[in-house]
Image (cartoon, one colour):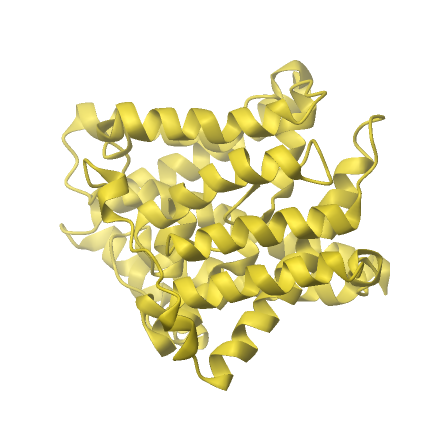
Length: 341
């Protein structure tokens, strides 16, 4: 949901992608223990698509990107795309991390970011001042600080007590802060989820593809290439974490492509393999692809039976989580860029 909000899309768009990434891609993936879903690395690309072409263009572009990925897989380009220089990926992710950090910082105080990455950086002091002094923003600021503090404290805790590493810091922080938010009477904005999530799905009609401009086709091709490279890089990292079956890169590309095609049909966010979820999966003792499939099933079960639970989450807490994610993307990928150089 946080990635969807950061992308300028409805939270439901991220949830649908998580379900498709778990259930469909998990069933056919070439990397059995990799977990797929909406990725922070695609946030600014999706945001640019929505800003330039409107939310209605997202579905057709993601659908076409998925079709390109399927073609890549059948053309056996997996090993070739895997050879994209790591420095390119690391540099891209570090830059995206910086943009996520700057844009989501404003959401931490219930303010709105601008359309410019540079302007978002320059106006961070203004948002800090709002959080410190303005009665309409101070509650959100307090919840954001509490979220960041919990994230940092939990990560320090699991470094000492590694058996708790299977519990993600994001889950602990968002659950704890949501509890405080709902019992404390805070006035910050919360996530808005329709009671019938599936009734809000905006299906993409195939005639929309015929109306795509060459610029949109180029965006779809770029999205396919970036998502493919990121997924295969993630799959390679996951292979190093376990001793089971190695990744079939062409099959993984086909699975990712089919997943993105379905996400495009539903008007949802694009997906990639996600290293945070995948590493948590392996650390928890996963041995078969059923673990990735269950990731999507539990998400579907929660949304179908208790969507009101998601509305208990303050947006400021999700924004703080993304600021933390953006910082880690910058820090880790700049270090990786140094090593690869």
